[in-house]
Image (cartoon, rainbow, N blue to C red; front, side, top):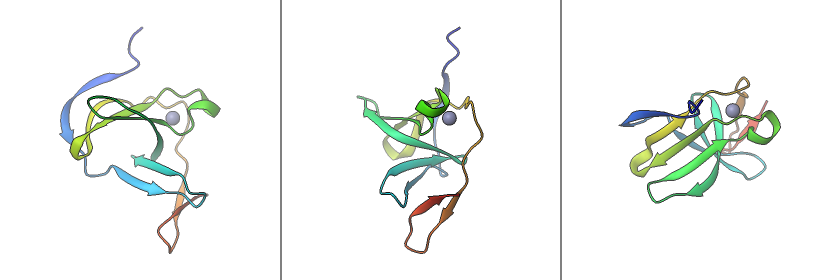
Length: 94
Ligand SMILES: [Zn+2]
């Protein structure tokens, strides 16, 4: 029942990317999924799937210092959105 997150060994992740969308939102991108900042915990920052409310998706990441993933759940209920990188560095959902 409590499989909603999995512990993982602490490892640095090079493919965590912080992006800004064309409507001014800051998101974290990891494995093509985007997450929005939820809150800061003592150990790190919790990012929830940016489609949590629309898709009832419980995926999240807990990111510690140095972009290390402390906890994660990547069981998304949906496919990732595709983003286009604009010339000004922002991202647009396509
Ligand atoms: Zn999701």
